[in-house]
Length: 374
Image: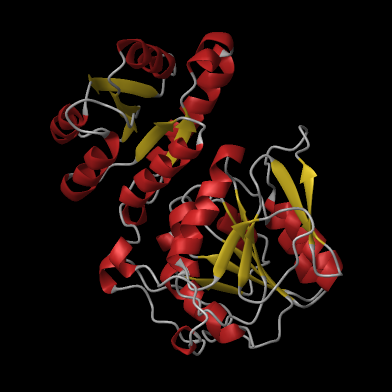
């Protein structure tokens, strides 16, 4: 059965081009279009599409407001189009918080110059998010639930039992997570916590990191598949939400307890035994820039059995081979469970390869990290 798509954009040219690209795929059917957020809500209710493509800047009602309304009234996977700017990154992250599943850069020149590449990317995204786990894609971390910003006061230096996210941030229908390790994580003095993710990752990382206390005892590295223009804005956003410190990694940054370094988009991040990070140019031969496998592999080489790695939601299998190297060195690897993933691809690859020491639901991972690291 063809994937039914609603195309929402105030630009007639963009609506036509997106509709033409999608309609050329025999397994995709464009069932309607809308020119603003209000029309999008009406069309979503009437047509019940499988996927909605959504612009942000539109008259009458913007895309983020429309996404929030759609998620409340008829939860549907939404693919946002965004500009590759700092402001575009901020808006896109807001849209993901509102319930959008994924995003694509909105570049009119690419549509004109590279139609085949754009077609393949757009159609692949639509097919992927059509299969996404809607239960979790429609929930986000509300601002009121965010942890306070990092502070040097004694009040912020809490024991490693940060409160879990409020019940409203997780649907009651979600099944309990499975934990092959027997439930309680293995307590250890880790030299590094490494977290890799892709589609669904921005919201997932917020949920995990906001549960960590300011005195979290291990350094953290984050690898999120994301464009170069987005990672700085994303790091700034996480830093405001979390008790720990979060920053976009720079070459030579030191690994420090309670500090999370986010791999910059378009580049590769490696860690060395001296406790610092190296930021290298993105290799065009690699699909992912940054790549989870590369960071995990360098961590395995540098810290042997002193790494705790976590693979969160995302399509593909990036992280599996890096997890294999970590396991060979004696390190621990956790995977997010299927029920709480937006896309159960990367964690599934780790689980199917028998590399996961534990499988946890998203809202339990932060708590277990705080319990495991001493």
